[in-house]
Each structure stands twice: as structure tokens, then as C-alpha cells.
Amino acid sequence: MNRTARLFLAIGAISCAIAVVAGAFGAHAIAEAVTPERLATFKTGAQYQLVHSLGLILVGILAVCIPSTAIQWSGWFFLTGVVLFSGSLYALVLADVPALGAVTPLGGLAFICGWLLLAWGAWEAKA
Image (cartoon, rainbow, N blue to C red; front, side, top):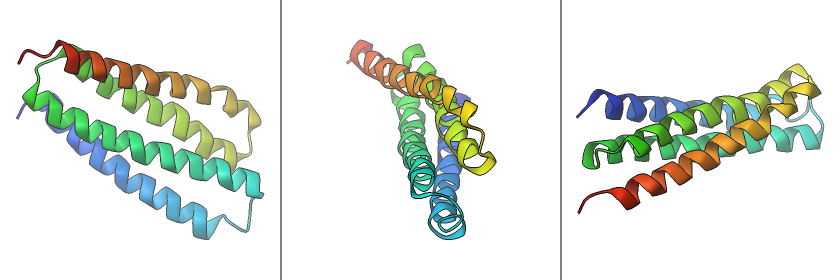
């Protein structure tokens, strides 16, 4: 297994664990301390982190089967999206800095690019 595949598998698995912790933290530790809107924002961050962390694991698996630069780049975009999208939502809620919400769409754009690159890499794969 190549190094990039191992990296995305490991980061994806760790990020899944962090997403579960974030979800539990949101449900139990801060549920009473923030508004329902802010709690929903936090939960959105955890949900998107979990989904895209599974995407990172998928990239790690596919990187072994399909030697594609596009697939590798999709992993980097998923990782960037997790940091920018979910990270900004967590920080927005925990630090109460509304300006951080301006970063969130950049993370969403990174997610979209990641999925499109994954599709491109699968499409260009040699049978």
C-alpha cells in the first residue's frame, strides 16, 4: 500500500473518531449552553466531518486500486473542507465569533471539488 493511501486512511479514521466526539460533545456538553440554532450549526459541522472523513477513507482505498492524481487531490480537498467547513462551524459556536462563518463556504467549495475530482479520477481509470 502506498504512503498516500495509508495517510488518507489514517487521517480519515482519526477524523471519523473526532467527528463522533464532536457529535457527543454537541449533544451532551454544550446542548444547554448554546442556542438551538448554534447547536444545529455545531451538529452540521460534525455531520459533514463524518461524511467527508468516510470520503477520505474511500480515497485511501481507491488510491491503492486506481493510480490517479485526481483521486489523490480529492483527498486533499476533503481534508481542506473538513478543516475549513467543520472547523469554522465548531469555532463559530465555541468561540462565538460570527466572522468565522465567512470561512465555511470555502470549506463547502473544497468538498464539492473533492467529490468532482473523485468522480474524474474514477472516470479516467483504466479498466
